[in-house]
Length: 147
Image (tube, rainbow, N blue to C red; front, side, top):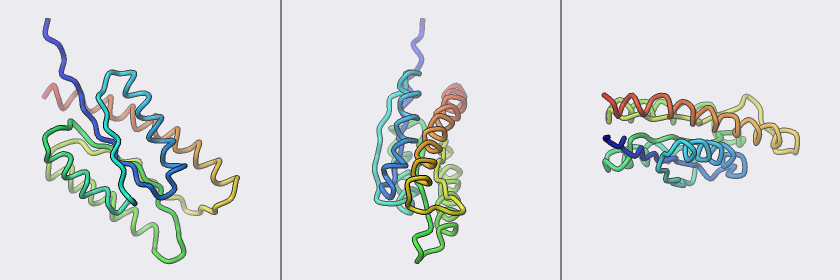
């Protein structure tokens, strides 16, 4: 009987609002670990650094896919929606250029205020998104390996 290949995934986690982002990372890694995936969590300062790291990780040949987790919020100086769109667009380009799956939980709310209610809501929301991220990875990566 032939053993199926180990599926190795890199999860890239931005450190801005790490207390919120880590909910997605932990939920995703918990589920993928249950499913037998080999995981590496790679930290980057912010969302803007994710696409280059994703590209380099995929080009290394060590991973079957990468997933990105970030929380891009309005900091009052930069257009957060522009930053989030730029990052997601770059991740799509990485996916198409490398022909490897790239998954995104790079999320930006319309409004976020640093108070208990919003922080509590988004912490839970990111746990949900982490589970959804794991489900997407579990659905797509086996298809790529089988192809």
